[in-house]
Amino acid sequence: MIKSLKATKNPIGESARQLELISQTDVLPFGMRLDKLGKLPLKPTHISTLQVNLGKMCNQVCDHCHVDAGPDRKEIMTKETMLACLNVLKDPSITTVDLTGGAPEMNPEFRWFVEKLSALGKKIIVRCNLTIIVANKKYNNLPDFFKKHNVEIVSSLPCYTAENTDKQRGDGVFKKSIQALQMLNKVGYGIPASGLTLNLVYNPGGASLPPNQLALENDYKTRLKEDFGIEFNNLFTITNMPISRFLDYLVKSENYEPYMTKLSETFNPEAVDSVMCREIISVGWDGFLYDCDFNQMLDLKVVSEHAHISSFNKSRLEERSIVLNQHCYGCTAGSGSGCGGSLVEQ
Image 1 (cartoon, one colour):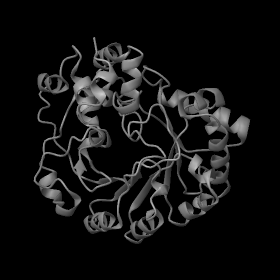
Image 2 (cartoon, rainbow, N blue to C red):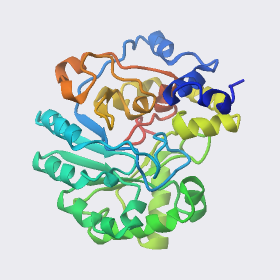
Image 3 (spheres, rainbow, N blue to C red):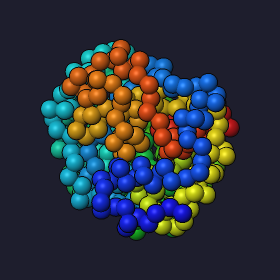
Image 4 (cartoon, rainbow, N blue to C red):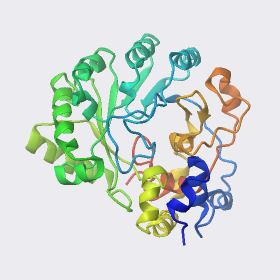
């Protein structure tokens, strides 16, 4: 039986608490699973993407959030750390910058950073929660700003109905998300031939795996177009990772062990070759480096003497072994899951 959260939350740090909970399962250790397949150590193929967490401050408090983001979080990336990122990004082989949070737009240096990235000619992805666009007048012109710098938008929308979306992300979120999507459509985002990419993200509402990505995308496109006149490019289905708030939910609802068993039983070896940690480096708000955004939330830093953006060494980091733990089953279950949705053709 998993220990209660109240019994473990205060005596030890949050990341240590989560790692202790994650280890309390009879599921075969993920590393051993890969070893049986001859895939250990798991190594990067290359580093083409710098995923940058600009801070944990957010205008929302979503039930499934693996960052545990919210309005009360004070962790914000400084301009100094952003400058270190820009120095690394002078390397033309790192072609993509993926900006996340929290709500990355709430970082006071967000627009300055995007402008600098744009000047470097990088592909810029912003993981926008949509509601930030309508949360305050100072954010209302974000669609025009995104368009000016040809930013690719990736936004969470758990369902095409208000009931299911608000249940996961908070009362009134669906209405605000629809309003933001209409504002993005108005400037060209998601419209065919505009060149402005708008992708949506689906996370299951509970302890289940996502459905078929293409089929669900077709449902989303039909309903959003018919009901609200909204268009978008792609839908990404992403498995909920057993960390942070979703881990708390699993434990409280006594679903943790069944969920981990489900992830293990649906483990897909084909997904291992395409997991995102093989081509990205995740940069924490304080500049420390991680194999992925999920490892960042568990404070599992890269195994390298170059574990901070200030000492970034691409060739050495591409030689590292990727840090694994039980939550990695989330990226390799079913059709696989990454920041760009399913990993294996369905």
